[in-house]
Length: 226
Image 1 (cartoon, rainbow, N blue to C red):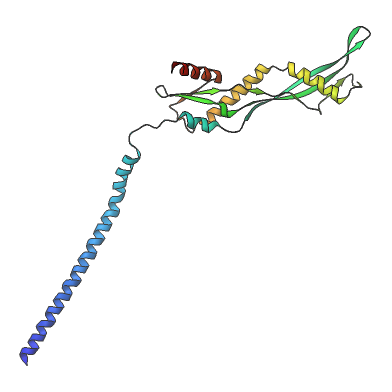
Image 2 (image 1 turned 30 degrees about the vertical axis):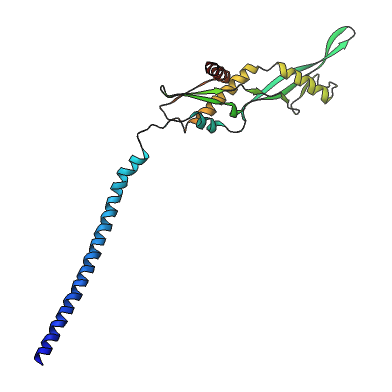
């Protein structure tokens, strides 16, 4: 009877030892897992901080392209300058054999200078960090007469609106200084192109402007050379 009790006690100890061993192994496994995960979390910023820049920055300098610059300025036709011109037109008349002036009209006309932005071309000199924009010539509109700004000399002149508009448009077409309008429009266009391309050209780049005709001549020479 004593032997059976002793045997039962030993079996209980063995089972208890096995159970403790399994629990110990599970605890060790959990601790190791925590250590591994924690180590990965700590190491991740260091790992990606080193590997990511190496992957994203292969040591190659990125330059803007002619295409990207052209796309940046390819917006709708830009009204560069609205020019107001004030003049005096004369209505010619005839008295017997002498030329006379029936009346004079003080008027106001508006002239618009605009560009087709899609025509602008670019060339890049990456060695000297110079971007050249080739600009088209301004398109000058016909004068638009302000019909609310007429003044007559003499004030009681007999005139119809058709004659008035005709002589004012004729006078406005020949009198305004179109070269000055073009100059103002060109200055406005250069400022606009510089602003639109600024996000692509950093401070190391210089932008200069030339006529589109120079770009066309350059392409013709290149094609002939090929």
